[in-house]
Amino acid sequence: MKPPLLLIGHGTHDETGAAEFGRFVHRLRCRLDGLPAEVSGGFITNARPPLGDSIASLVARGHHHLIAVPLSLTGDRRALGDIPGTMALEQERHPTLEYDLGRPLGPDPRVLKLLAERLADARAEMPRFVTDEPPAEIAPGETAVVLVGHGSTDPAVNAEVHRVSRLFWETHAADLLTVETAYVSHTRPGVPGGLERCRRLGAKRVIVLPYVLFAGGVLERIWAQALAYGANHEGLDIRCAEVIGDCEGLADVVIDRYEEALAGGGQSSAPAARRPSAVLPVTRPFPAGRMPHVETGAGLVTAIAPRLNTSRDAGAEPPSPGPLDSEPLGPEPLGAEPLDSAPLELEPLDLDAFDAETLDAETLDAETPEPQTDGEIEADSMIGVAGRGEAGEEPRGDAPDGPLAQPGVASAV
Image (tube, rainbow, N blue to C red; front, side):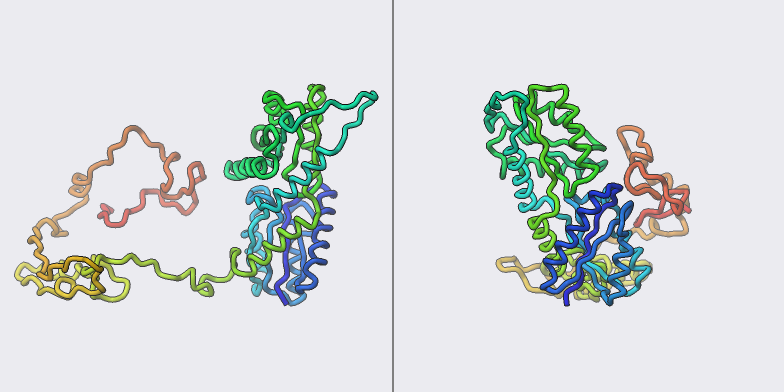
């Protein structure tokens, strides 16, 4: 029996969206019943059933390996929630639990096809008129689309919605005037801003196309903003399309994400020791003829260090040439000139300059040049400062008070 599919939804206070989510889970149960594989779903916050209850129910039925698929069109962690953190908490409650996390749904060519179907339905719907006059003919070149996403504080997520608009225009709406992008909240332009841009471009009809999975509060806000704009622009034909919704096309995309994660294409929660690809060493080849004849993993500096240490004795003779100098290891590249096997001639070192007893903090400070900068650099604007992550984050409590010692630089402390 295959591992169960766990659908993860973001929290919603709207009962309509939660009910449609439940109907979609039931559709997938009917689709995957022949595999066979169980299907469950839950919300991270603000809705029932909670994700923890769904996981506890699956574990109680003997399932310890899950395939989790975020039911989201974007990878916005701030909107959907911290899925890895939530799943890590569930693993603490259920120590035997392991999971593979699949990719979000969009942008997928089948999702764009579903959007095209919703657009076609909105274009075919005839508006109701009080008079008996026939409606004016509006050409496709005078029709525009405003694709509306949720909106996020993450610019990368907003750029992803803008990319979907461009893909949709070129693949399914090339005959239309334009496909503009708008957002419900958190960023600009809003729905009125997208409609205004279409009007200024010469559109006589604008179709508002929600880039949303299920109906609910978000869809109502999109329609309310569109109707408020249309009340002040009576000459503009504004129509609102439906959401993608619970349908077979959306179920096909989710099942493909499930099969992809099951085949190893998702993010696994298994320890790194169980994944050989995660522990493969990264090596950099040495030039031909200069491969050090030392232990595995030792580099050029490691091979030369013993020779430098033995030369500290004033009366010591220079070491005899070793395998590093006389025996080139490894295959010679085709067409390469043979390397000179004569021993390397090293210039004598001034040992007095490296006497540790003569060095003190004042000498080090005096000989260490200050970095030259074009101007003052504030600590808050630097990335990599001790105790900070990205720019603008609060300092961590475990950060040291002073600067960290850099590797390869003598410390005066």
